[in-house]
Length: 231
Image 1 (cartoon, one colour):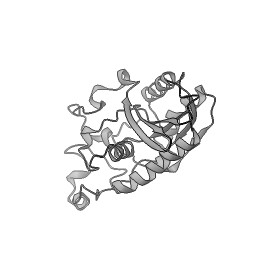
Image 2 (cartoon, helix red, strand yellow):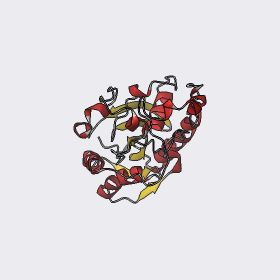
Image 3 (cartoon, helix red, strand yellow):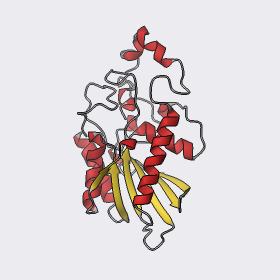
Protein backbone atom coordinates (compact mmCIF):
# COMPACT_ATOMS: atom_id res chain seq x y z
CA UNK A 1 0.00 0.00 0.00
CA UNK A 2 1.42 3.36 -0.98
CA UNK A 3 1.64 6.08 1.65
CA UNK A 4 1.96 8.89 -0.90
CA UNK A 5 -0.22 11.86 0.02
CA UNK A 6 -0.25 11.09 3.74
CA UNK A 7 2.72 12.89 5.25
CA UNK A 8 1.80 11.64 8.72
CA UNK A 9 2.41 7.95 7.89
CA UNK A 10 5.88 6.54 7.19
CA UNK A 11 6.72 2.86 6.76
CA UNK A 12 10.18 1.45 7.51
CA UNK A 13 10.92 -2.13 6.44
CA UNK A 14 13.76 -3.70 8.42
CA UNK A 15 15.03 -6.54 6.23
CA UNK A 16 17.35 -9.39 7.10
CA UNK A 17 19.92 -10.17 4.39
CA UNK A 18 19.77 -13.29 2.21
CA UNK A 19 21.67 -16.55 2.61
CA UNK A 20 25.45 -16.24 2.90
CA UNK A 21 28.09 -18.48 1.33
CA UNK A 22 29.57 -20.06 4.46
CA UNK A 23 30.59 -23.66 3.74
CA UNK A 24 32.68 -23.95 6.92
CA UNK A 25 29.84 -22.93 9.23
CA UNK A 26 31.82 -20.08 10.78
CA UNK A 27 30.22 -17.49 13.03
CA UNK A 28 31.22 -14.67 10.70
CA UNK A 29 29.68 -11.82 12.69
CA UNK A 30 31.24 -8.52 11.61
CA UNK A 31 34.02 -10.10 9.57
CA UNK A 32 34.53 -8.85 6.04
CA UNK A 33 34.55 -11.15 3.02
CA UNK A 34 31.28 -13.02 3.53
CA UNK A 35 29.06 -12.59 0.49
CA UNK A 36 25.62 -13.81 -0.51
CA UNK A 37 25.37 -17.30 -1.94
CA UNK A 38 23.64 -17.81 -5.27
CA UNK A 39 20.49 -18.66 -3.32
CA UNK A 40 20.96 -15.51 -1.26
CA UNK A 41 21.04 -13.41 -4.43
CA UNK A 42 17.80 -15.02 -5.56
CA UNK A 43 16.27 -14.11 -2.19
CA UNK A 44 17.39 -10.48 -2.62
CA UNK A 45 15.90 -10.34 -6.11
CA UNK A 46 12.64 -11.84 -4.85
CA UNK A 47 12.24 -9.17 -2.17
CA UNK A 48 13.11 -6.45 -4.70
CA UNK A 49 10.27 -7.76 -6.88
CA UNK A 50 7.94 -7.86 -3.85
CA UNK A 51 8.68 -4.21 -3.07
CA UNK A 52 8.77 -2.96 -6.68
CA UNK A 53 5.33 -1.33 -6.50
CA UNK A 54 5.82 0.15 -3.05
CA UNK A 55 6.46 3.83 -2.40
CA UNK A 56 10.11 3.26 -1.40
CA UNK A 57 12.16 6.49 -1.44
CA UNK A 58 15.13 5.49 0.75
CA UNK A 59 17.23 2.29 0.91
CA UNK A 60 20.01 1.88 3.45
CA UNK A 61 22.11 -1.08 4.60
CA UNK A 62 24.63 -2.30 7.11
CA UNK A 63 28.20 -1.85 5.82
CA UNK A 64 28.78 -5.63 5.68
CA UNK A 65 28.89 -7.17 2.20
CA UNK A 66 25.94 -9.51 2.67
CA UNK A 67 23.67 -6.61 3.63
CA UNK A 68 24.92 -4.35 0.84
CA UNK A 69 24.40 -7.10 -1.75
CA UNK A 70 20.88 -7.75 -0.45
CA UNK A 71 19.94 -4.07 -0.62
CA UNK A 72 21.32 -3.35 -4.10
CA UNK A 73 18.48 -4.91 -6.15
CA UNK A 74 15.91 -2.99 -4.09
CA UNK A 75 17.69 0.33 -4.56
CA UNK A 76 18.15 -0.36 -8.26
CA UNK A 77 14.48 -1.20 -8.83
CA UNK A 78 13.50 2.18 -7.39
CA UNK A 79 16.26 4.17 -9.08
CA UNK A 80 17.82 5.08 -5.73
CA UNK A 81 21.37 5.38 -4.47
CA UNK A 82 22.13 2.88 -1.71
CA UNK A 83 23.00 4.53 1.60
CA UNK A 84 25.03 2.93 4.40
CA UNK A 85 24.40 3.21 8.14
CA UNK A 86 26.92 1.58 10.48
CA UNK A 87 24.24 1.36 13.17
CA UNK A 88 22.61 -1.47 11.19
CA UNK A 89 25.68 -3.71 11.56
CA UNK A 90 25.65 -7.20 13.06
CA UNK A 91 25.97 -7.55 16.83
CA UNK A 92 29.48 -8.00 18.19
CA UNK A 93 30.31 -11.49 19.47
CA UNK A 94 33.40 -12.95 21.17
CA UNK A 95 32.94 -16.21 19.21
CA UNK A 96 33.32 -14.47 15.86
CA UNK A 97 35.52 -16.47 13.48
CA UNK A 98 34.85 -19.76 15.29
CA UNK A 99 32.61 -22.68 14.42
CA UNK A 100 29.59 -23.00 16.66
CA UNK A 101 28.03 -26.39 15.95
CA UNK A 102 26.55 -28.42 18.77
CA UNK A 103 29.21 -30.77 20.17
CA UNK A 104 31.93 -29.85 17.68
CA UNK A 105 32.56 -26.13 17.99
CA UNK A 106 33.61 -23.38 20.37
CA UNK A 107 31.37 -24.56 23.22
CA UNK A 108 33.47 -27.71 23.68
CA UNK A 109 36.42 -25.66 24.89
CA UNK A 110 36.40 -24.88 28.64
CA UNK A 111 38.34 -21.67 27.98
CA UNK A 112 35.22 -20.29 26.29
CA UNK A 113 32.79 -21.11 29.06
CA UNK A 114 33.60 -17.90 30.94
CA UNK A 115 31.84 -16.01 28.18
CA UNK A 116 28.55 -17.81 28.88
CA UNK A 117 27.93 -16.62 32.44
CA UNK A 118 25.25 -14.02 31.78
CA UNK A 119 22.58 -14.63 29.11
CA UNK A 120 20.69 -11.49 30.16
CA UNK A 121 23.33 -8.96 29.04
CA UNK A 122 24.67 -11.11 27.20
CA UNK A 123 28.21 -11.85 28.41
CA UNK A 124 29.38 -13.19 25.01
CA UNK A 125 28.68 -10.12 22.94
CA UNK A 126 27.30 -6.64 22.43
CA UNK A 127 24.82 -5.73 25.18
CA UNK A 128 21.21 -5.97 24.07
CA UNK A 129 20.46 -2.45 25.26
CA UNK A 130 23.29 -1.08 23.10
CA UNK A 131 21.75 -2.83 20.10
CA UNK A 132 18.40 -1.22 20.91
CA UNK A 133 19.90 2.27 21.07
CA UNK A 134 21.75 2.07 17.76
CA UNK A 135 18.97 0.26 15.90
CA UNK A 136 16.32 2.72 17.07
CA UNK A 137 18.62 5.50 15.90
CA UNK A 138 18.93 3.87 12.47
CA UNK A 139 15.17 3.29 12.20
CA UNK A 140 14.37 6.87 13.14
CA UNK A 141 16.94 8.19 10.66
CA UNK A 142 15.34 6.11 7.90
CA UNK A 143 11.91 7.39 8.94
CA UNK A 144 13.15 10.98 8.65
CA UNK A 145 14.71 10.30 5.24
CA UNK A 146 11.45 8.85 3.88
CA UNK A 147 8.81 11.00 5.58
CA UNK A 148 5.40 10.22 4.15
CA UNK A 149 6.81 7.33 2.09
CA UNK A 150 8.61 4.04 2.73
CA UNK A 151 12.20 3.07 3.56
CA UNK A 152 14.07 -0.24 3.50
CA UNK A 153 16.89 -0.91 5.98
CA UNK A 154 18.92 -4.11 5.49
CA UNK A 155 20.44 -5.48 8.68
CA UNK A 156 21.03 -8.75 10.55
CA UNK A 157 18.95 -11.23 12.51
CA UNK A 158 19.91 -10.49 16.11
CA UNK A 159 19.72 -6.67 16.01
CA UNK A 160 16.43 -6.87 14.10
CA UNK A 161 14.91 -9.23 16.64
CA UNK A 162 16.19 -7.20 19.58
CA UNK A 163 14.77 -3.89 18.35
CA UNK A 164 11.46 -5.56 17.52
CA UNK A 165 11.35 -7.10 20.99
CA UNK A 166 12.00 -3.69 22.51
CA UNK A 167 9.24 -2.02 20.49
CA UNK A 168 6.79 -4.82 21.32
CA UNK A 169 7.80 -4.66 25.00
CA UNK A 170 9.19 -8.17 25.28
CA UNK A 171 12.21 -9.14 27.33
CA UNK A 172 15.44 -8.85 25.36
CA UNK A 173 17.04 -12.11 26.44
CA UNK A 174 15.61 -15.05 24.51
CA UNK A 175 16.12 -18.45 22.87
CA UNK A 176 17.81 -17.75 19.48
CA UNK A 177 15.89 -20.65 17.94
CA UNK A 178 12.63 -18.77 18.52
CA UNK A 179 13.48 -15.57 16.67
CA UNK A 180 10.88 -14.70 14.05
CA UNK A 181 13.40 -13.32 11.57
CA UNK A 182 13.96 -15.66 8.65
CA UNK A 183 16.47 -14.95 5.88
CA UNK A 184 15.28 -12.11 3.60
CA UNK A 185 12.29 -11.41 5.86
CA UNK A 186 10.72 -8.00 6.41
CA UNK A 187 9.94 -6.63 9.87
CA UNK A 188 7.83 -3.57 9.12
CA UNK A 189 7.43 -0.58 11.42
CA UNK A 190 4.64 1.89 10.66
CA UNK A 191 5.05 5.37 12.07
CA UNK A 192 2.39 8.00 12.60
CA UNK A 193 4.48 11.12 12.90
CA UNK A 194 7.40 10.12 15.11
CA UNK A 195 5.59 7.31 16.91
CA UNK A 196 5.55 3.62 15.94
CA UNK A 197 1.92 2.51 15.78
CA UNK A 198 2.29 -1.03 14.42
CA UNK A 199 4.80 -3.76 13.67
CA UNK A 200 4.31 -6.36 10.93
CA UNK A 201 6.28 -9.34 9.67
CA UNK A 202 6.43 -11.06 6.29
CA UNK A 203 8.58 -13.55 4.38
CA UNK A 204 8.50 -12.72 0.65
CA UNK A 205 11.18 -15.33 -0.12
CA UNK A 206 9.91 -18.04 2.23
CA UNK A 207 9.77 -20.70 -0.49
CA UNK A 208 13.50 -20.19 -1.13
CA UNK A 209 14.57 -20.61 2.51
CA UNK A 210 15.83 -24.08 3.48
CA UNK A 211 13.25 -25.58 5.90
CA UNK A 212 15.70 -25.89 8.81
CA UNK A 213 16.42 -22.14 8.61
CA UNK A 214 12.81 -20.96 8.77
CA UNK A 215 11.80 -18.97 11.84
CA UNK A 216 11.30 -21.27 14.83
CA UNK A 217 12.50 -24.39 13.01
CA UNK A 218 14.70 -26.96 14.70
CA UNK A 219 18.21 -27.36 13.23
CA UNK A 220 18.44 -30.08 10.60
CA UNK A 221 20.10 -33.23 11.83
CA UNK A 222 23.84 -33.06 11.28
CA UNK A 223 23.86 -29.34 10.53
CA UNK A 224 24.31 -28.05 14.04
CA UNK A 225 23.46 -24.41 14.78
CA UNK A 226 26.27 -22.71 12.89
CA UNK A 227 24.23 -20.78 10.36
CA UNK A 228 21.73 -19.65 12.95
CA UNK A 229 24.43 -17.56 14.59
CA UNK A 230 26.05 -15.98 11.54
CA UNK A 231 23.16 -13.65 10.96
